[in-house]
Length: 120
Image (tube, rainbow, N blue to C red; front, side, top):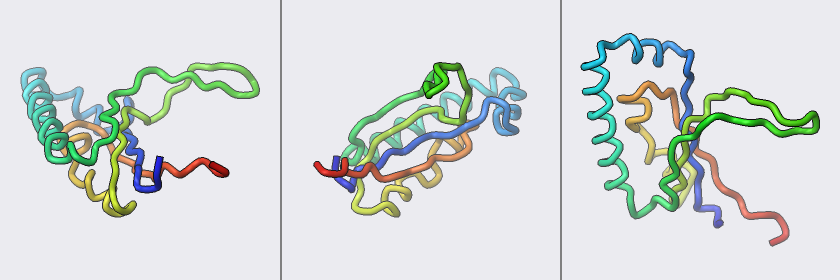
């Protein structure tokens, strides 16, 4: 991948105040917000389809593997998308007011460049 490729990671907390407020909504209101959010996300994808390299998707339960073995963990990673942009700033701008946090109870989107493998 070239340096104009960026990984966007969606962050959120199952135990955070935004999720608590989301879960406290009456079911009909929450379902309406879900439909609004999905429509907005679809519009975001349509608007940026030419720069989306990998749509990605939601992330499931996490296993951590290290020197001490394998364990189940939780983190704030909720999904990902891969985009192309002329700069890091331009990639970040794609996610301003994204439905992940402007409608849904997500907290943020972190965007980082995918760097070339050294020596290749």
